[in-house]
Image (cartoon, rainbow, N blue to C red; front, top):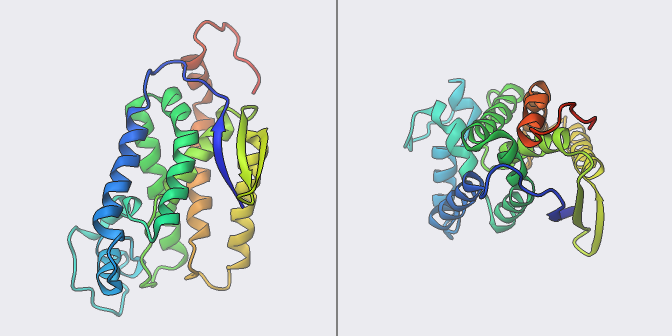
Length: 238
């Protein structure tokens, strides 16, 4: 529907978004060493080994998976660094690049890393909850990135964001409308695919990650605003 290009929110505390850059670099490296392979059989093996397979996690799978590089619970983390194709990778990393630096600024490096991973874990667990016997692996950073988008809309709803609508039309619009519209699109897509919980896109994981990031950020928003604006005696209405 659209891709983000740039936002208007400057960094106020940190000098450099080190964790954001590290996450992007890890995703690119992982894709170059795994996802860029031309063998479908190898890609499927990697996805089932490092991705979240609900049936494996709940011990209800009827299919034997011979490749177990890590304990299944660890895939709740490792799946975030795998992608199914170039566009899957690029779109996730572009959203992360545009919005994550300000969230890392508000949270600090370590807390931001926790927020990112926590959002991804919640997204995966919701996917498992909805299809506990599925043998289709979940891969991609979308759930974790959705958590960052949820945090952004809580902290910076009035920020102006340049987007490319339909990949053709440049627009400058408020973050609340951009990310709120994105979230509603995920909910609508989830509803449309509700009869098929094993659809190709895990919309529910996007929704779960967004709610997790927004919920945690909303709970501590005043502390985060004080970190960003320590000179303000009275917190502004956002």
